Image: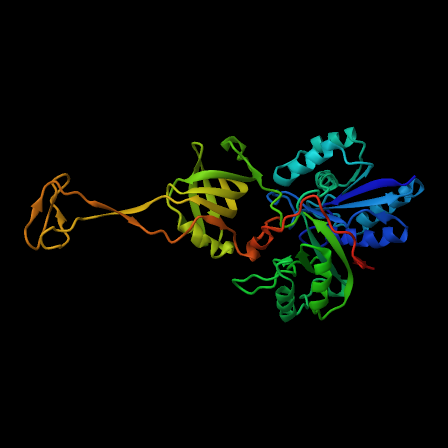
Amino acid sequence: MALTLHVGIDDTDSMQGGCTTYVAALLVERLSKLGVEFLDYPNLIRLNPNIPWKTRGNGAIALRIKVEPQLVDRIRSEVLRTVEENSQLGIEYVDPAVVFLTGPVPEEVKALSRRALYDVVDVGYALKVAGRCGMEVFAYGDFRGVVGAMAAVGEELTGDHTYELLTYRVVEYRGKPRMVSEESVAEMDRATRPRTFDNLDPETGRVLITPRGPDPVLYGIRGEDPYTLLKAMKIVKVGEPIERWVIFRSNQGTDSHLRWIDEPGEVKPYRAVAFRAVVYSKPYTIPGGHVIFRVSFKGEVFDCAAYEPTGGFRDIARKLIPGDVVEVYGGVRPLDSGLTVNLEKLRIVELAKKVEYRNPKCPKCLSTMKSMGRGKGFRCRKCGFRDPKARKLEVELPRDVKPGLYIPPPRAHRHLTKPYSRYGQEKKGMRYGFVEPWHIP
């Protein structure tokens, strides 16, 4: 009787190269040749983006297959061999891990996965969960990759999700400039949005589907369904050979990492949080172009930062005034001065009144009057009229910002950031079946 086998993989790459999704792409080909049945697209699970030792997008992979019992040992060997051959072993902070789980995913593993989306998960705790749930664990180094591998298995994407088609370069081209036609990317974007997203940055025109590092990815197109991704791939033109490509199902673009909190004590280092607060201080700009303002959250004060790469988003932050009610979304960074929320998005809930105090007009000649001293009233310098009871007038000024949701431009998005175009396209209780083809080779 066939078994359901979940394979979780993480931490095979470094800033110098490698890519965990590329390992998954190789395994899709190799396991297909062994005759396994894939139960889902490979799952690309992005975890807490605030983890300080992460590599790039902090992504882990889960493969879910149906396999005959006599093939399990062979599949295990093939997975471990492929991971070992394609990991950046020997480089600091590269600690590859693979986990295997047979049968349904236990609730305790799902709970660990949910926590790994927004918080730091202790390796020792993860290993205890693995033992209690009957997971096989294979790891190098300090076992840090076990957390991501388990979290990938635990996230079955039963809620909102997206898809990504990733293409990979042949060995000879890796490390060289990527030859992807910018004009064709713009054409693809026009033809497929909003079913694809974050292809181009509207403020700068920069192409966003191509990574910048030495990893083997040529380009990746993110979208709402695999059919649109196949259409998009046919439009994009490249000037170099493609070694292989695969469609992944993912939590990218879903905001699944942001945890709504109700108490300031839950604002802790490296967490991804969301909460409602009141603007406490006037925003100011620090060297580098970063905008900082403080908010009061049930009596506790936290800094919020809109960094220079967020572009025009900083202009919204600059327009806030004390008393505005806002919802802040972002990652918590510990600094010497305390905890700072690095903003990923901002919702203005309610605007405070912006007022200015002006000297009154003379009732006789309509000239602006001048104060005669604190509490002594005003006099008119033009006609000499005096009014000891006159006071400054409170004038409400218009605000040049409106309540609503504000998100930085796509070039500043994290992999998990939900863009404007995805609001209203969230999925729940549904997923697309396999398209043909969904990978080559």
